[in-house]
Image (cartoon, rainbow, N blue to C red; front, side, top):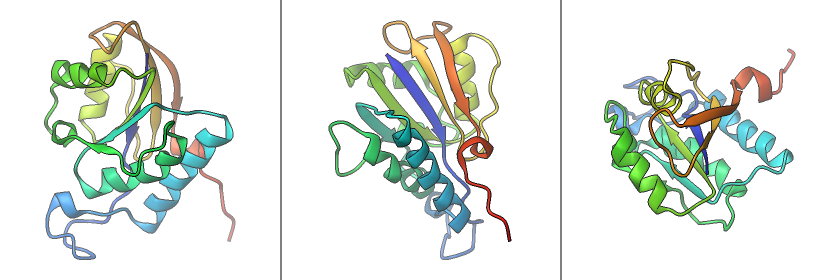
Length: 166
């Protein structure tokens, strides 16, 4: 199977735009543009996933929504899992839940430091620092398990976000 990890895009600061808790922080205008650009980039290359999962936090859900266009079959909403929230790193439990989806390709939208730790767990070595809006694809032998994946690609936002001139 393939597992695509996506870090949420840029979010507003705590205390702005009505975000009174970390869970309520929504994407900034730039964050929304980044999430849309990632989905458009992947779609333009024919990439699809069979399942889309995100944390329950607003910024992860908002990053996941444009990726629904790449999901086959296309659900109305991403699956939301509380064990993908920040500081809830439980790789074996999450790997089991992903395997239960019986999907060839699963996209997971989450947070750091979890995603950095997930990549390290999958590869068996420190490897990636996920920028906001970055995505990485891992080929997992069978399902996701410790040290049994290979990195297929990594996309930092600088690679797929169009540069605008003023």
